[in-house]
Image (cartoon, rainbow, N blue to C red; front, side, top):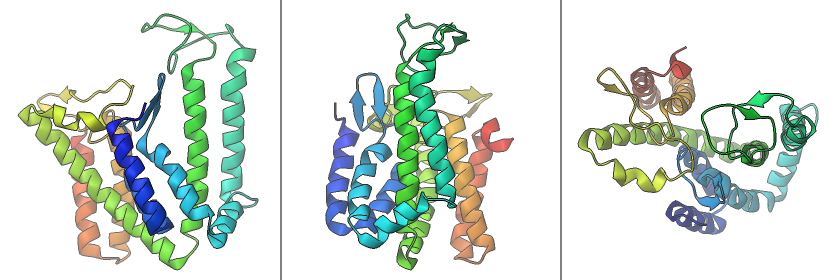
Amino acid sequence: MLEPIGFITLFAGIVCLSIGHRAASVVLVTSTLLGSAAALLVGAATIQPAHFFLGFVAITALTRTREANAAIHALTPPAPGFWLLCMVAYGVIGGLFFPRLFAGATSIFPVGTTQYAPNNSTVPLGPTSGNTTQSIYLTADLVCYALISSVAATHRGFFTLLKALILYALFNIFFAALDVLTYSTGTQGFLDFIRNAQYALHLDEQVGDIKRIAGSFTESSAFAQATLGALGFTGTLSLSGYRPLYTGQLAFVSLILLILSTSSTGLA
């Protein structure tokens, strides 16, 4: 079922088909912030906006000869993408077949739904819906790597992605502020349309009197992971002299938010 945020993603994809691959790559990068959103619900599986939008990026990029060749080159040895390809192949094959080959050999905490009734305990090893969804996510990560590599293969494409990542850091700060504001005013329902994923959402957790910031993600650890990447990127740009005042401010605010998230994922 296509969710409201899915219709927005679909509209953005159609627009980007007419604008071009660089615009599509900007939307893709920023849409990865929507970690608690579901553009499409297929049974128990959640398809996030970034994964849904990936198809539009593929259409706009791979229909261009230079970008298509760059995407293929990114996945051939000795490029790093080749080893990512090997890992993805192993992960997908293992995820789909190993739970069946070794069914019942041990107990697991299931990721996704199983043949057993939902509980908070372990269940015998066997196939779960997570084997399918995680295989899809892993394959999408590989496709994303190839597509982004193809866009970055040109000078204009490289700087488009650089600006997209700066925009990513800015939007991450915006969603963090919105998370704190709506929590403080009891208006969290305002963000329900981007918090519709079929995951466990940890949005109301506190440490003392401090809210653990989740931003647009499912929990503070996911937010901290994203913020750590934004901090590293904008901080490096500032130290390298690329618009140092602007990128430095983004890095500083990201650092403050990382600390306020109280997540060991970002602080350890």
